[in-house]
Length: 608
Image 1 (cartoon, one colour):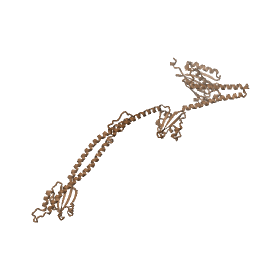
Image 2 (tube, rainbow, N blue to C red):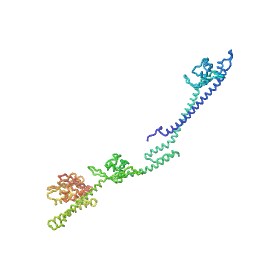
Image 3 (cartoon, rainbow, N blue to C red):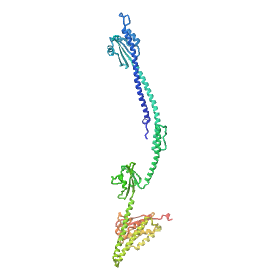
Image 4 (tube, rainbow, N blue to C red):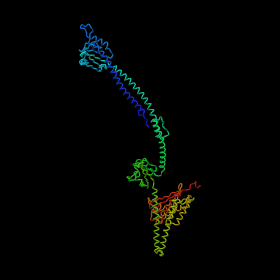
């Protein structure tokens, strides 16, 4: 899991919130305090100036109203004004103090004495104030120094309200603003210290809050890896402590549930893996989500190849409009996967998966290989048909001849013996057929025991061929290619004689006049191979693999004419297989047929 940086963590968020709340509180308090302080300082400054102006204006007014001798023996008005200014007009905050008479002349000042006697400038607003008798107050900034000054024009009048002059005062307010600046700096420094302290406290508080959360996060990572053995620490009974308790309870429940789920998963996995049938699961759309190995083998595709594909497409079911809910009612479908080289049938059983609200959520398809079952069923039907046909032919013949005999043919001394001979031949044919069927049935049910003994096959096969030499047509020759050395095999002599009889009988039946039959024995590494070859009409390539099937005849009409049951080579095949040997045929049309079978040699260890 990606590591969370400090600036993305809850600690930073809690700390930032605390700092922001503190900043907001300080800003609100600071703004209110600074505004109030500035107002108070300005008001105090104005009150001080106002009190001094009242005292100054009172004394100057008295000086204006004082009677002075005409001979000029007493002090002049300018001298009295100068004395008053020296006494009441001296202050560090007074940047400029001027006394103006009603002729707008400067008669006193605390700055440059050269200004006495001069007229005031027009931009000082003194003249309008003297004329109107209205005092004025303004704050102006010095263009050269940038200092802010309080400018007061205080008009004076006599007892008859006649203007006598005015006091023009400029008082520097820099001290007030400097004091405000110092207080704001102190407030700012205090704010910075408070922010630092609150940040440290916030980090400590945030750590105490996030520590159990981090532990739960680590435990969640451990749980994600499948380890449910650990528990988180509980540091208190508050909400986080209750969360930790709940987390531990959840851990225990998930542990139990995961154990149960894992057991069920293992059981299901084991069942699916060991099933001989294939299982395919789909989602609600019919797309394949899971498939076991037997299913992959049956359909010839891996789960990676079919994942996400529709089940109908994979199973090659043409009708894709089948309703999922109808599949379960329909039971099963037989899917033909056959091609030109192989006959292959699958049976698909469908089961609908529903949730607790009976909503369709998926489909389970169980596949089973029914190829052999179908083959057995086909062979059974074909076997019944063949047996019925083989029995019906001689029975029909016998019935016809017996009916003829019943109708009076038995009295005919020439025809009756012929009819009885035919009936007897057909009876023997049915007996042979029944005996062959019984023998095959016993072989199929392993009821026929093999009496094997140690046999030298060289004189044994000579003896068998001698019997055929005595009974064969003189026009057919039997060529023997048998080694002189002794070859010992473990075998049932009667059963091997029956194999040779069945093969030799076919060879004699299909051999032409003046033809020959070759009988050859070849010793190979650990077995003996016997070949019986005739010069008959041969067998077509597409039929050669079927000559060992029951009731199969390459030339059915000729075989029945010659009295064959169609079971001789099938019996020979079962006997050879029970001797752990092999049997097969090779043929070309018009060039005869070769039948091979092998028998295992006795090993030296067993022979000793």
